[in-house]
Amino acid sequence: MNLDFTQIVPYIPFMLEGIWVTLGFVSVSIIFGFILGTLIALIKISRIKFMVGLADAYTSVFRGTPLILQLMIIYFAIPQLTGYNIPPFFAAVLAFGLNSSAYISEIIRAGIQAVEKGQTEAAQALGVPYRPMMKDLILPQALKNILPALMNEFITLTKESAIVSTISYLDLMRRAQVVGSDIYRNFEPLLFVGLIYYLLVMGLTMLGKLLERRLRVSD
Amino acid sequence: MIKVEDLSKTFGKTEVLSDISTQVNSGEVVSIVGPSGSGKSTFLRCLNLLETPSNGSVWIQDYEITNPKTNILKAREHIGMVFQHFHLFPHLTVIDNITYAPKQVKGETADQAETKAKSLLEKVGLTDKANAYPNNLSGGQKQRVAIARALAMEPEIMLFDEPTSALDPEMVNEVLDVMKDLAKSGMTMAVVTHEMGFAKEVADRVFFLDHGKLVEDSPPSTFFSKPETQRAQDFLEKIL
Image (cartoon, rainbow over all chains, first blue to last red; front, side, top):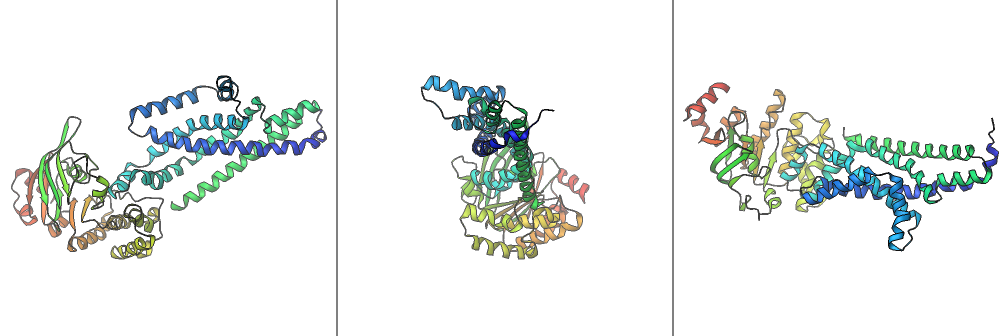
C-alpha cells in the first residue's frame, strides 16, 4: 500500500477554496436553470403552437447532446465567432444553467399537469387572473409534488459540475488534478475532493428533506 | 340575472346542449334536474364560461359573457361557483382559501378580507376551523368552506354543481342547510342536484333537462305532482 495523506496537508487550504468556487457557480446555475426551466414549462403548457414547438426543440437539443460538448462550445467555440473571450465562470453558468433548464422544464411541466384540473377551474370561477393563479395556487402545489425530482436534478448538477475542470476553471475537481500533478500522487487528492463532493450532496439532500417536511404541513 | 339564448354545446360530434333559452331573475332559485348525461353540469358550466358554448349567448347581470370582448374575469366576480369535489386549495388554510380571491381580485386589504371571512365562517358554522388545512376537514366541512370562499367575492349569483353528491349521507344536510339559508337571503341560485327534497322545498323553478334539451321549466309543485312530459314522468318514477 502506497498511501500517504501527509503529503496533501499543505494543499488542503488550496483544495478547500474549491468548495466556494464550485458552490458559487453551481448555485447560480441552479437558480438560473430553475427560473428558465419554469418559464419554458409555462410555454410548454400554453396554447401558442409556435412557442411550444420552440420550447420542445430547445429541450430536445440540450438533452440530446453531451453537457461537456455544450460547455466546450460556449467556452472555446463561441469566442472564435464573436472575438470575445468569455470568463470561465459565465461559461459554466451558461452551460449548466441552460442544460439543466431543459430537464427542469420537463419536471415542472409534469408537476403542473399533475395538479387537478379543478384547481384551475376553482381559481377561474373566482375571477383570479392567470399570473397570480399560477404563482400562488398552481405552482406551489406542483412544486410540492416534484420536489424529489428537482432535488435529483440539483444533485446531478452539483456532481456533473466537475467537468468544468476541462475548461481549466479552478473548481474542486481541477484543484485535485493540480495537486496531483504537483506531488505526483493522485489517489490522495482525488479521494479528498471526492469526500467533499459527497458531503456537499449530503447537505443538499438534507436541505431537500427539510423543505419537503415544511411543505407537508398541509397534509 | 341570468339570460340564456339559443345555447348549444357540442363536444366533437355529440351535441350535449341544444338550443336552450331561458331566464333566471334576481332572487330566484332554480334546481336543474335530469338523468345523468342530460347536460345539466355542462349547462351550469356554460353560465360562467368554464365551458365555452358552441352557439348562442349568455348574459350574467350586464355582461354578455359569450361575447369575446367581455372581460370574463370581471364578470366572474359576480357569479360564484361551488363544485361537486370542493376544489379547495389544499396548500392554504381555510381562512386563506377564503381571503385569497378578495385580496387578489378585488384588492381588499388583509384586514377587510379576514373580517369578512370570519363572519362567513360563522355563517357556515366553522369558526373553529379558520386555521385548519382542507385535508383535515370532513367532506361536509370542506363544502361549507367552499361556499364561504365563493361568497367572499360577494357575488349576486351562485352556481352549485351537485354540491352534495360527493358527501357521505350524514353530511348532506349540513350543506343543504347552508344553501337554504342562502336562498332565503335572496341569493340568485342555480343548483344542479339529485336532492329532490331540496328542489321541492327551496326552488322557485325546476329545470328538467333531457338529452341536452330544456324539456320542462315549471314550479316544483307542478313538476313533482303533474309533470307535462312523458320523459319527466319516467325520470320521477325512477328516483322517487
